[in-house]
Amino acid sequence: MQIDRDPSLATLTTMRVGGPARVLLSLDSLEELPEAIAFAQGQGMPWKILGGGSNVVFADAGWGGVLITLPSGSVHQDTDGAHEQLIVEAGYDWDTLVAESVARGLWGLENLSGIPGTCGATPMQNVGAYGVEIADVLSWVEVYDSREGAPLRLRPEDCAFGYRDSRVAYALSRTPAPRLAYRDLAAHFGAEATPTLAQIREAVLLIRSGKFPDLRTVGTAGSFFKNPVIDCRQAHELTERYPELPVYPAGERCKVSLAWILDHVCALRGFALGPVGLFQHQPLVVVAHAGATQADLDRLAATVAERVMDATGIAIEREVEMVY
Image (cartoon, rainbow, N blue to C red; front, side, top):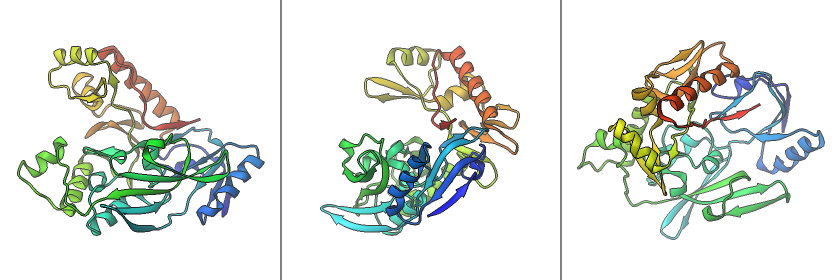
């Protein structure tokens, strides 16, 4: 285990803002996790596990706690009845796993190509894209219960997702099962297409490259805001005013496209305040240029939320975790 004092949070997150953390513990193995938690508790400090840092923003003043990063670990393939399981440690890079599943001829993860972060974050957030979400393929999660000081294996129906992931198993299939209903994929392939795994992955990566900025050149945390889930009566009223507004069922409620609202209702595509702004090609995405701060992000988010409320009556929420 490596111990670093006052590491820069801006260098540990893809948004590239934030002051220092008190302590960073970089684990060499998952077996060191209880020791790391005990260290934080012994210091009387809060602790938090950090994956790829792609869905979190820290305060400019920093964070007075212990950050824990996990080792990348490895992937193990096992057969479970009709499914092939990929069992992977939480610190493993997500898109590397997707690429490996495609190379092994395993269906299920290909639509989730190009998403930054680690595998341990996927069940915590129920990561989803292009018509697929982790709940569709999750087999089990092995967690460490910090309250009991013991490991625990949870099935999807048992997950409270307040635990700290250590290993995750995904149930995949060798039987071709392309999922192309998502509009962008359907437009890319056409109605009669039967693409291969590799072709679907390539298409998803191509589509994402047009919607998301390059993490190598600009700070971003991907989609900064959630698509609102609202009462269907309110959604119907909005579609009477804006017939082209995309609306999707969400249980007994309706989910509306915030990106469409930001673009076509609020005219906020490319809107910027100083060094932060909405990405020109996808207004759900916030970008942070050199010199940006957490305060800049808060000001932008508040302005966008106010504009949406004034135009639609919808209160929007941030998808990115803010740690102050």
